[in-house]
Amino acid sequence: MTSPHAEPTAAARAETEVALAELNGVRAPSLIDTLGIEVVELTRERVILTMPIDERTRQPFGILHGGASVALIETAASLGAWWNVDRTREAAVGIEINANHLRARRDGMVRCVATPVHRGRTTQVWSATITDDQDRPVCIGRCTLAVVPLA
Image (spheres, rainbow, N blue to C red):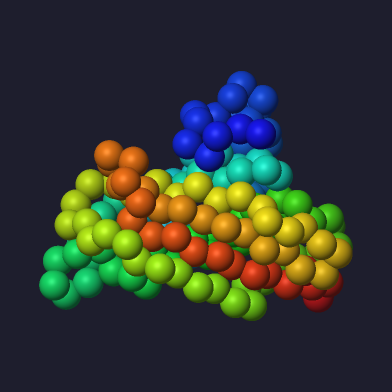
């Protein structure tokens, strides 16, 4: 198993290119754009996203907003779950999320690494860790998603 902090392999980079091409063909402007979230890796086994800590993602007291961290975790889990379903017939939608905020950050970039815990026929569960520029944990979370038929 690949370390969650390892850089993407050549195979992961190739899979990510395919996933991003498909994603960009179907998605509309969204919270991903508003928060400045960037996809580093998108495979069936791991999703890596980055997000800046700036005026879009800080709370009024100048630190990373917990809601921005939760949005980053749900985005990573949702993208990973979406890449694991039959996208011609199914979608994955969040039904539960929890997070523990471990460290306050005022600036820089955070990185979210999400991996599947369970990929079932009707639900998926993804675990995620957000780290700072120095690879220190900022937030950990888990997101449960329902696999639903496309309308």
